[in-house]
Length: 308
Image (cartoon, rainbow, N blue to C red; front, top):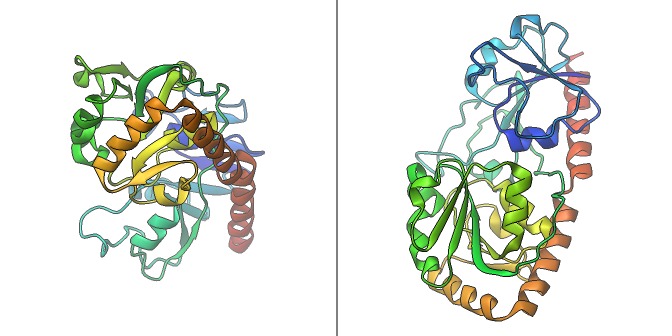
């Protein structure tokens, strides 16, 4: 089928467009947030076409990811609203912007989000993440810690940036992502927005993956690290407690316990390898691309059939 969707979240879209459909991506002259067109730093197949929005007239369904997109969807096209984010504000009483609607369905990317957003009478479903498996495997030869995050300075406590010093006192940190340059210092090396394939190679050389986000759906970089076979240390918050089983890493709300676990894994390569192997098995099974695309095909078929 022909699917209209805006280029909003590059990593999620990279997985979504690996399916069997034709993907119509709005583009404008400015290539701004309403018309980014095809990705330039991700590998998208030729079935992804960028077109001016006014030229997209044959969409069978629209994937909407922001409230402002709704008014741009051609009349009569069924809508699936993908919610990527945890709620903000009056948690757990946050009302979703699509609450109490009968003209669309909200697809959450985690069960945690489905639990915490108040969508009223709007139908909801959950399609968990699936990713394109990284080409590299964990080697862990460097006694360093890897973090992948975007805008950690601006987002602060949300991304756990205030916790970095506690871990940097144990081992040097390598922080990868957009807006990380201001973090550079004696114990922190900033890798500002590297190409994804290069980032994967560098991350895989680090001993441990750190997931310090207090409030996020579920970072795709965490799943990528697990599929590469990395041992994981992270905060036991939001969906991470479902994604990382006890034999694949260490999760805790006790930061001191995580610092102690960092010392342990730096001194015990065999334990790192054992946790990493289990992390890889878990992530390939739960967050594999085939499962993700099959779940989406079912939902797309259901929604387009219902509209007919």
